[in-house]
Structures are given as C-alpha cells and as structure tokens.
Length: 110
Image 1 (cartoon, rainbow, N blue to C red):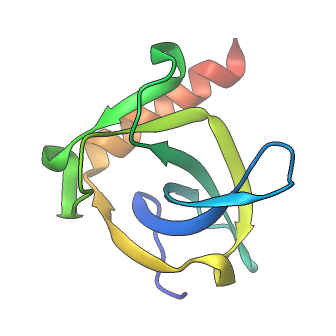
Image 2: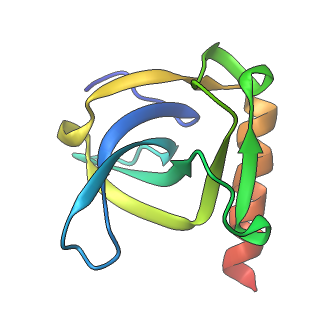
C-alpha cells in the first residue's frame, strides 16, 4: 500500500509475542522508513494497563474513525511489511500523534 504517512491507522494481522499466530487488528503507523517495512504500534479496544496505553477517540481523528474508544499500546511495537496491510481506517490529528510518540519515547527511556 502506497501513500502511507505517520499517524495513519491501518488494519493488519498483528503477530502474537510468541509468533505462533496473529490477530487482525488496527495499528498506528509510527514511522515509514525507506524500503518495504513500516513501524507500528498495536491498537486494542480494551484497556489493560494504563501506564502503557494512550486512549484514542473519534475527536482525535483528522480523517476516519474507529468503531469504539480504543487504546494505542506503547509497549507493543513491531516492524511489518507494507504488503501485510489490509486497509486504511483513518489518520490521527498531529497533536494526538505527537502525544503518543512522546509517551513512547518516555517509555523507551525508562
């Protein structure tokens, strides 16, 4: 899929940590480096651990939306091939994207 930018939310088959399966879910694109891969963060519909998640709602979108309030998991980051993207859902506003990116940076520095 071409034309991807940071802040896009797309749907992929996100791998389990064990790499023994995957689940179709939305992800936030964090980086679009040169080549065939992108760096993403998992999005879930359930809150698990507030210290490693950022809530996103309809008001946080510049385009599109999710079906319900969701959470970006800042501790679930992966590099995936662009070819694994099923479809695009939307685009976060830059303010929300920057909030998430800053939380990820703080998390990685801890």
